[in-house]
Length: 345
Image 1 (tube, rainbow, N blue to C red):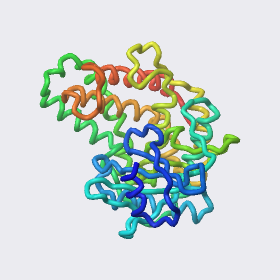
Image 2: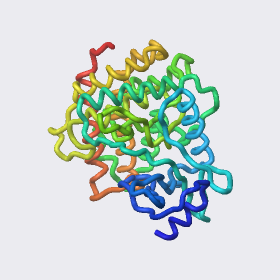
Image 3: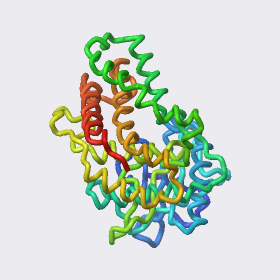
Image 4: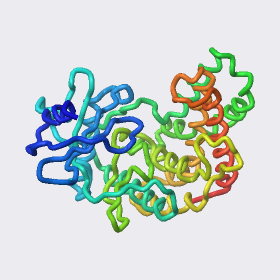
């Protein structure tokens, strides 16, 4: 790891680096624990930024630093990043971008989805939005149109029109069902254009394992801030439920395994509404059930477009993988649609 120690030496930290070891299994960034002399626990975290996904690294780190500075001013524990010797919050080694932050000691992440953690997630991500609701500095859209369903539907239409590998005919029934619901599912974008729905600073990757807990089960802080950007609150609310309330796997080949877990839904919603009651507009609150539907719908659209395009975006393990994902997400959407159709918050 000598070259990684050399990379760390380009950041403004005073400690003598003893070792650098791999950490976790991140899907986007490569992450390492940094040990310093005289301490047997890691002190820093070194990450290689995936600039294929986050192409504007200056915007990325500017967003993160504005958000973390604002949270610190409000007394919240949050991630701390260090400048490099070139006065940026990243170091470019010629082709790769790197950053370094404090390691949060004695912290735990959970993968398990149970109602209690879902409640804490709703409370924490809702508080995250609330605390940032008065941040007046501009935050950039680090992945343009990331959660824009109209854009995703256009991508699907383009894929259908080209039909580059001849798969449209076999998926026509899914296309029919998707487009039949198009007007209902593009509600958010229409409300935004009408000036009724605001964009907030949102996390946009709300998962239980994007929170750090202490040994007593209290939330220490929110992590993985790369996707923080202006969005509808529907992003943080709906994206959590898409994964957490699914009783099956995202790519479950057995559709009978898939249902929408109302206990998880209710726990997350309870926590979220507790934290957001002082700033959430009525139009945002009343459309939270729509948000719970929007994200399995949007992910169905994305998986199906990729399948029709010949599997050019998502990694696949077998030829029908994106089709299996499409079917699984659509089943989740249908179950959520059935359970939430008469729900009022």
